[in-house]
Structure formats: structure tokens, C-alpha cells
Image (cartoon, rainbow, N blue to C red):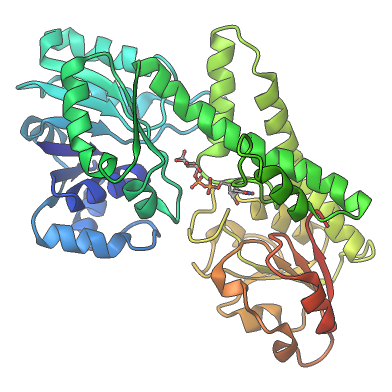
Length: 432
Ligand code: UGA
């Protein structure tokens, strides 16, 4: 089976490379010729641990190809994965499906034999129905099958998540397509991955419901953390105590800054928008969005209290500014709310991130990028640990500080408070 991935963004590139590594022949297509040429040279446009090595390996052994010719690539392939972006519509909250439909039109005029056309992008319920309508205009229904196969990859863990997923979800009622796709995923299923075949609409909704539920878990524990701070309780004890109940599970119960990234904020809004369309009130998810939007304000208020209500001229260092560790992605990172607010209040901010300089802060007053942890925290009044990179997990603060001692606000609860306090620092964390 020859596969074609349309869109070499995060989903398309990672899935394409991993499918090639499992022995399939894969063409990754993108309309950005510059990007395609860079990929052919082994240059990867995104930061993802392990991805570059896999691209180079599979490109060399000729299982992985890159092209900007969509029509030719579709003609040569049996299974087409649509992996283009579905960002939030400008000025709205629903998903912008223009790229999905443009690509579908192009596929439509390139169907020369039976094709399985799959949405791997996160798409609202009924998008598959719309794609089917587009393809039907020029093709008989026997010539194609439209399937939903959502991806559940996390940035920074994508390769592992692809090879060892908790589940593979295939949304189709077409027996032939179901059989072919089960065979495609058989290397993962044989290692114990659960395989679930549902209706196409159900598969589309499983993806949104999963992301919304994970966002709910995080928001829930963040609110419990607020209560813990007032009642002298350690939120980590609560996460463990709750997580031991198998019905709840311990993952995604780490309190911290607002959740961010390219998925949870976008998908929680989009599922509300879909529900509105079908006159259904998803009040829990609406509250989650509201609570998360307020999260940065709560943490900034703590910063204000920690600094005795004096922010002007205070030197504040940020360790990590991306939305989480192991990614260079700044989309909806809580630092995008916190740093501008602190800068406006007159703070002097240095930041260090393992993925380097961020253009997002270039126009802010008194905000500087530093290329080492040491230079970022030198002379600080307050060090904020904003992301949980391994680089920040074993810092010997005592050895780094020459003069005055700074305060540490550990927003990811990386350190043990007693150890840091023993080194003579004032230490604050979340939910404790
Ligand atoms: C998320 C989902 O986890 C993936 O399953 C999904 O495929 C992906 O969205 C997507 O839709 O493409 P991702 O956005 O890469 O993956 O990041 P996560 O690891 O889920 O983290 C999201 C946010 O939640 C981050 O800001 C992170 O710091 C925060 N988080 C996560 C917490 O604050 N606490 C936790 O316990 C877990």
C-alpha cells in the first residue's frame, strides 16, 4: 500500500515518517515548495525529539518521499491522509475548514483508482460527510471511501505516541476500508494497541471529546490547587489520592499554569461551536474554557503577592516560555499572558528557553532573551520556573548565586520545597 500524507505540519510529518518506518512507502506532500526542499535535505521545520533521525533514515532508504505535486502524489497512492491545519476561524471559535475542503477538491480530480481518503486532522463532526459530497461530484462512490482516523500525538512525545498509542480509532462503516486500515495498523495492534472501529462521526467526536476531557482534568486540578493553597494541603497528595482510583487515573492531574498549545484551546472552543450548531449546551466545557482563561491572572496575582505588591523595577527571570517542555511551540503558552503583563507593570524580565529566542517578546519593553540559565537568573529578584524541561530539574541554585538570594516560584512543582528552603531560598510552588 502506498500512502500519501497531505500537509507536512506536525501531524502529517510525524505520522508519515512513522508509517514509513513501519515499512510503508509514503509520499509527504506540501504546497510550500521551500519546506519540501528543506525536508529533502533532512532539515525539519518543527522541534520534535527523534524526528530528524527518522526522516533522514527513511528518506535514505527511499521509503519516504517529499513532493509539492498533490495531484500526482494522490494518483500514485492508495491511502490519502489529509493532515492540513484546522485553526480557529479568525474572529470566531469554530474550526476553519478551508484547507480541508481545498485539498478535498484537488483530491477529487485525481482519483484514478479506488482510494481511501482519511481525515487525520482534527475535524468537527460531519466534516467527513462534506468531504464525501465534494468527492462525489466528480467520482462514483465505488471509487473512494472517506474515513476518520484521528491522531492522539502529544508534541514532544509524538514518535513514542505513534508507535505505542493507547488506541487506534477508525471511523468508517465501509468493510473494505476497515479491513485495509486494520492491516495498515497491524504492527501496532500486534503489540497490544486497542483498535476501535466506529462510525465516522463518532471517530470525529472521540477526538474532540478526548481533548476536552483532558483539558477538564487539568482545569479541575488547577482549581483544587487554588483551594489547597488556602488550606495548607499539598495538591500532589490530592492528585495521587484521586489518581489511585482506576476510574479517575493519575495522568493529566498535574497542577500548573493554564493549559496551552495548538490543540486544547482550539479544540475546546471548536466543540462548543459544533454543539451550538446542533443546539446542545456543553456547559462543563464552557466553564473549563473560562476557568483556564482566568488561570494566568491567578498565577500573576500570586507573583504580585510574592513580590510584596511591588513589581516595578523587579528583576524577574523565566525558565522556559513554551507551552510545555520538549517543544518550541509558543501557541497559547501562558507566558504570552504573563510576560507582557509583568513588562507593562515595569518588571525587568530575562528569559531562557532550551529552544532559544522567541520573536513573540521582541517588542516588549525590558524583556531580554538570555542564552544560558546562569545569565538568565543572575541578579534576579524572582525566578519563575514556567516549563518542566529536564534542563531545569537539577539546578544547583546555591552554586549559581553569588550575591543576594532570589525567590523561586516553581509553577510546575519540580522541586521539593524543603530542599530548596534548606539552601536558603524562599520557595513557592503551585497548590501547596
Ligand atoms: C494534546 C493531547 O494530549 C494529544 O493527545 C492530542 O493528540 C493533541 O493535543 C492534539 O490534539 O493534537 P499536546 O497539545 O501536544 O497534546 O500537549 P499535552 O501534553 O496534552 O499538554 C497540553 C497542555 O496541558 C500543556 O500546556 C501542558 O503543560 C498542560 N498539562 C498537561 C498540565 O498542565 N497538566 C497535566 O497534568 C498535563
